[in-house]
Length: 235
Image (cartoon, rainbow, N blue to C red):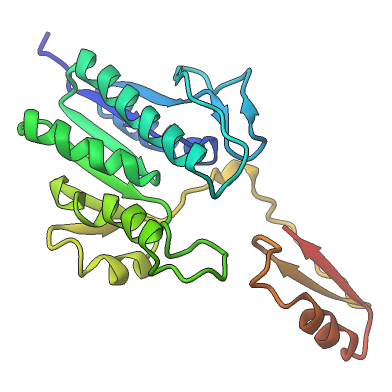
């Protein structure tokens, strides 16, 4: 039997694990040997996790309490080093790396320099610090350092994948290689096809975070001016 291609899929956030699972299944369907490496820390709940998707390998991760903190940056930097130490042991043919954290890209460049024949795909799930919902000037030095961990190292990959076309427009100044958009997949088995909207009210849906960049008062005013009952779903 010929040696199978060895693939590592890696992320440091549980919110990316559904996408990691789809990538893993796609690789397995081609006969590849696949391992998915993730974190044992929940960024959303800010505590250690006790359950993981089947066949995922969770790496010990330093906890942190705040989204914007030195503690978080140190945690991501440590995770990135530990992740690539694990990848070094496995010597894969292909790495599918989901970013952020930007520290992962910095460590990926060092690994790629040492292992130039290993194919590296970087999958940009979000843009840090550009998309952070904060009003602080993102040109300040700490944010520049944060951004540069991506900007100065992203040229190491063989393919740059983004989850939307907008990210490619932003990354044109950083990366001149091949880019592809692979939108976030969903399991069609979970979809209902018998949706019926009511005639006696208007249903509106807001999808996203409720944070400081959302004008809740204006949304409420617009809804209150609608001359019929309104049901607002927040997802």
